[in-house]
Each structure stands twice: as structure tokens, then as C-alpha cells.
Length: 386
Image (cartoon, rainbow, N blue to C red; front, side, top):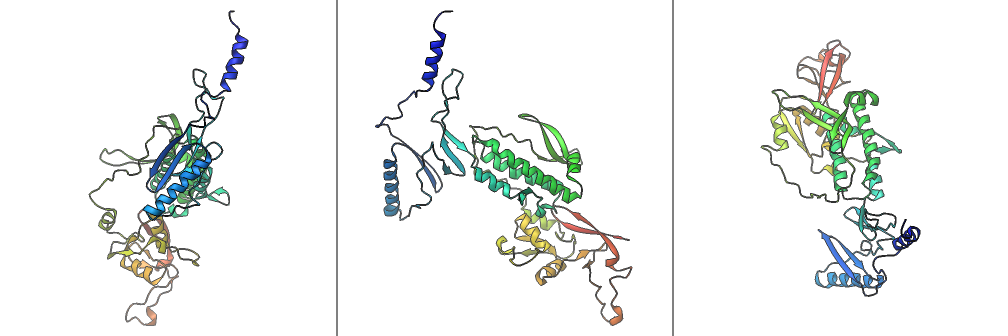
């Protein structure tokens, strides 16, 4: 064997410990600038003293020419290797790893900029699906259909993953996926009044994705006239980093033939009781006015409006009057009449005291058993005689 392989290997290891550029060059300076709306970031290569001077000059320019004050608490100077700068929800740092080599055996990541998902962001996203440190169902979605519930969870998770698609540590969102899946299955279990295991048996599927086969939860709604079925799917989203991903912060708006409110009004159905008589619209000034402090439990109509994030609610005249009077909402019997559980029937005009009937009478609404049929748009009571 020719040459000196041992000496060559030793020199190669020594070469890997030496930087290819001079990091101590006192004359080397670089300044990069990036801005998004009112958020901006400067990347500077040089001593900290010059970075302080740049910061003071920017503050002076904003104060003298634009009459603006630079926030001292938000405008920070951070060393990219020992700390991380926060910009648009990302952590920005520089990489350094002498053991990371390319195909040629050369160091390839030292000094490169890295985007990361902040761990506190992951914890904040997970907190919505936790109670006392354990996954919990979302009661505001109980009145939606399984299709809407699965689609809602998938949209929320996809939005977070796609926003952080450029992050180097995107795999940290796997914890969020696990918590959201537990919360989703518990929400479906509460909705359908079955166990979590039964939810998996009913909706678990294995589908082909761009990254291979993946287990998912899938709700399929068949449609007539040879139309494609409606499919809501949870899972199947890869956590692989894509450095060429494009974040679309202004997606194209799709204008339909009618607005959502128009479609709800054309349905001509009360979204609380299902009645089709004398349809009206209940309005609130702002969604922030819905939660009322000191109230033990929110009324059902408040829960519906808060869950949909809508300031309008299509109701019948009876339910509308009950909302403004603060009364408990009444159900609708099979013949379309309203009644409130636990109350006796009203007297008929001219019937006197003998016209009042007891709620325990066999023909009164209280003697009926109630089956709740819940959907994403309405809450309807269907009454059966015992």
C-alpha cells in the first residue's frame, strides 16, 4: 500500500478543526436587512459596539424624521450563536457542528442560518388541548357533526405545520399532533357517546400520501347522483422540512354565489330548535361581549355563536324572545309547537284555573322522551311518545 494513510487521516482530522475562513478578521463587516410590515430584523457581522451604534442611529432617525419611538424592550441585540432572535414567530440562530459533513467529507453547516420552532410556541399551542396536564375534549365542538369536527382539527394542525415548514426542528410539532389526536378522539367519543377505542375502530384508515402510507382518521359522507363523496381526514401531514416552501400570507379569496348568512337565511330554519316559522336574526355587537363574568354556565345560544365566531344567529320568533328575556330555550315537539322542559303548559284563554294541566299528565310534553339530533348548523329535538 502506497503513501502514509495514518498520517493522512491525522492531517484530515486536523483540517476539520480549522476554519476555512478567518473569523477574526477585524476589517470584515456585513449588514443584512429584512422587513415584514412593521417587523424588521438586521443581521450584522462585526463587534457589539458597532451594533449598539447602529441601533442608536436607527432610534434617532425614527424619532427625528418619522416621529416614532423605538421600543427598548422589543429591540434587542442577540448573539446568533449563543442566543436566538425572534422574528415572525421563528427563532433565528446560526449553526455550528464540525461533525456534520457533506458527501465530499467537508463541513457544510457551520455559519449557516437556521430557523427553528420556539419551544414556548409548541407549549402554547398544546395548552389549548390540555387540562391539568392531560388531553381533554373540546366541548364547544360537541354540537358539530363528526365531519366538521375532524375537518376543524385538521385545518388547525395543517395551518401550524405549514407556517413552520421552513423550521429545522419541525419534528417538535409531533407532540402537538399527539395531543390534538387525543383531544379529537375524545371529542368524537363525547359526541357519539362511545369509547375512544370505538372511535378508532370506526374511523381509522390507512391512506397513501406523498411520504408513503399513513394511518389517519377519516370521515366520509356519500353523495347522490354519482358525485364524489365528501372526505374529512385527520393526519397524513408530513413533518419533513421544506426549505423551498412558500408562506402564502394573502391567499386568493374565492367568491361564492351567496354569502354564508344568505345561505343560512335561505335555509329558513331556526338554528336552535329547528323550527321553520317566523324566522328572524339575532345580532350581537361584538364576540367579546358574549362571555359574561360571574355566570356559571353560558347559555346554549352563546356557546353556538362563540364556537362559530359569528355575530349573527338565525332563530325563530319564540327562541329570539327567550334569548332577550334570558329564559331557558324551549324545544319543538313533533307538531312544531314549543315547550320548555320542567314547566307546565300555559292556560288557554278563557279556560280559567281548570285550563292548566300538570306537567306529569300523559299527554303533556313532559311525558315525552327527547332525542337530541345535533349537527354543525342546528340543534333539533325529535320527540317520541313513551
